[in-house]
Image (cartoon, rainbow, N blue to C red; front, side, top):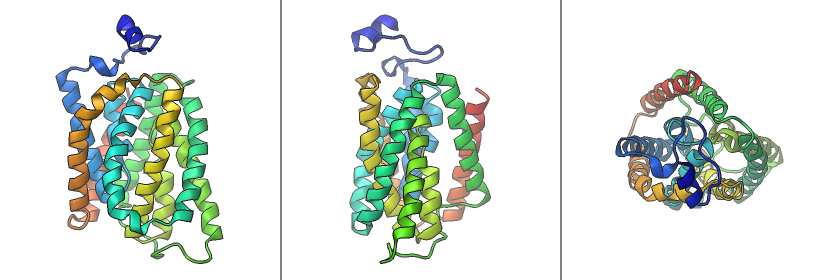
Length: 272
C-alpha cells in the first residue's frame, strides 16, 4: 500500500485500518454505491442529508479526508441536477451570506481535520449522525416549520442568524464532513418547505466547490476520483428518485425511517 500510494503522488501510507480508494474490493464498492443511492434519495427529498447517510459507510472503508472528497465529488454532479430544479427559488443575498461564512468555517474545519486522529474523526462524525438521527426519529424535520415563503424586504436580522448558521455548518463540514444540521435548523425554522429546500441545495452545492479545493490543497490524493464514476450512477439514480418522491412520499414516515438508519450508523461509528 505504501508503494502504491507513492506511485499516485501520496507520500504516506494510509492510516492503520484503512484502505486507499483504489484498493477497495467489489463488495466494498457495492456497499458504498448503495450508501450513495440512499443518501442522494434522502437529499432529493429534503435538500440535505447526503453526508449524514454516506459518510458512516465511507469512513469505515477510507481515511476521513478521502471519504469526504469522494462524497463531495459525487455531490457536486448530482447537486447540479437538483439545482436545475430549484434555481428560480434561490434568494441570492441569503445564499451569498451563508456560503461566505460556510467557506470560512470550512477553512478552520479542514485544519482541524488534518490534525485529528482518523478514528477520532469517525467517532465525532458518529456523534453528529446519532444526534441528527435521534432528532429525525423524534420529530422529522423534512417538513418546514417556518411560514416565510421568501426572503422578506426587512431581512437584516435573518442575515445575521444565517451568517452564524453558515459558519457553524462549515466548521462541522470541514472537520467531520457533515455540516447540514445548523443550516437545516435555521432554514426550516424560518421558511416554508419549498423555499428552504431550494436554499439548502444551493448553499451545500456552492460550499462543496470550496471544500473540494481545500481538501486537495491539503494533499488529499486525487486517486479517490477513480471511484467517482462508479458512485455517480447510483448517486444520480437516487437523486432523481428522491426528487420524484419529494411530492409523493409521506414526509413523516420518510423522515423517521431515515432517522432510524442514522441512529444505527451513528452508534456503529461511536463504538468503532
